[in-house]
Amino acid sequence: MLVKVFGSAVFGVEATTITIEVNIDQGIGYHLVGLPDNAIKESSYRIAAALKNNGYHLPGKKITINMAPADLRKEGSAYDLTLAIGILVASGQIQGQEIARYVIMGELSLDGSLQPIRGALPIAIKAKDDGFTGFFLPEQNAKEAAVVEGLDVFGVSNLQEVIDFFEGKGDLRPTIIDIKQEFHEGSIFPEHDFADVKGQESIKRCMEIAAAGGHNIILIGPPGSGKTMLAKRLPSILPPMTLRESLETTKIHSVAGKLKEIGLMTQRPFRSPHHTVSNVALVGGGSYPQPGEISMAHNGVLFLDELPEFKREVLEVMRQPLEDREVTISRAKFTVTYPASFMLVASMNPSPGGFFIDAQSSSGTAAAEMQRYMGKISGPLLDRIDIHIEVTPVPFEKLSDLRRTESSVDIRARVTSARAIQAKRFESVSGVHYNAQMSTRLIREFCALDDSSLQLLKSAMERLNLSARAYDRILKVARTIADLESSSKVEAQHIAEAIQYRSLDRDGWLG
Image (cartoon, rainbow, N blue to C red; front, side):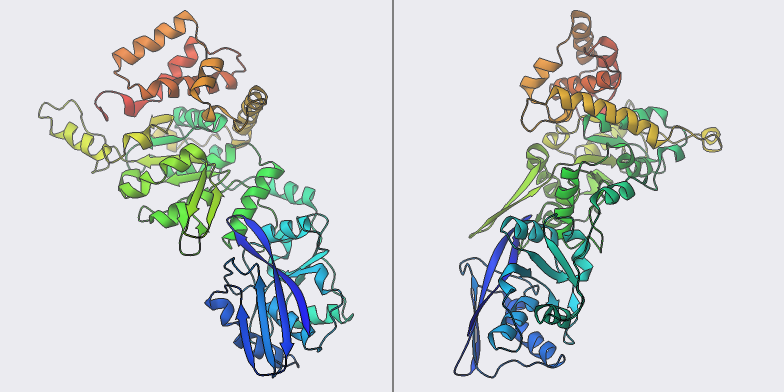
């Protein structure tokens, strides 16, 4: 008897429906074709044990299973449940008249219980698009898949529950998720709040500007000055996620298997890989490509602490994703693309010893040491960072001050307002949503300067010996400062403040 059941394969952050044909005929053998990997080939042992422990059996006949399309490689153990149900229906052990209406996925344990799978959300989206009625999957993944409206999502804990459903027994009901309630609960504020930061008013102002314009930022300061503490609080002042952003982010974390029984991700991600991270772990890839840290930070913040300690080749592979806001991983037979639109926040000590050194030392040794350490950061990477700011330790008087400072809620309101101005400005420009994404043409159009502002910028570049790469960055940041003040024009005071945020372009830093 020939039976067709349906599963799904995930490539990148998109799914492809897989038709699994199970044919049982005279003879003996178990033949699995259609480019399955080793995990799928081993499924026969898990399926045989699970069936026996639930009162069923693997037919002692010739079982031929084809996973179509046959030229597309399938991987992982998530097809166990699909294959098991197909075998039971094909061998006549259970009824399966309605089986073609459902996508079925899940990894089987030997007792028939189910283990969670990766990519439940993109699979559910594809199932709905392809016209399936429902989706059976492990109960741990049910909430993330249930955010897809118009699809019955059945979270099951074991093989027997699926069998009972097709046999017309039991009382299995679809998982229901209230999207509005998910967003309401997600709006509860993160634990990290700028109200806990003592002093550092200039740095908080800088972080506000970075958040308002989506600018990449680097913090330079000695150990204990608060660089990491400030970076962890940046997501708390970013605008709330839209439903589109939430779905995009959830899909990536679903593919990576990082959701842990939650529905939608409603908080912007904050990723902080260690400086020993490899190229593949940072940007994604592997024999079976998986998203890396920069994709996990999509729509959120990627924090690279102690930037010069990262391997140079690791930092260099970030250059293109920072520009294109996506990562493309190519293999001989396929190519996958992961979104990677994130804010880069980096921190570093000013010298190998961790502290500021007198760059004007008559011996020149201190200046050379500083230059050598900061030279570990390549110019092209630095060129993609809009804001450089020096962080100094907080004095005792500020630390002991019990007065509560401005909270993230207040700062976030100003940031959201500035982002709304930018959204309106760029509504007719494809792919541009905030100031950091402006091209040179858009900078000329939206950052026009009057004579006094232009003269101020010219004077600053000459006196501070700012590099040419600083010019466009200053204009972008100045545009954001103007937006925070609801100013339609970029004025001299906005330029003056933006110039302060180019520390590493000044003579005596990186030269």
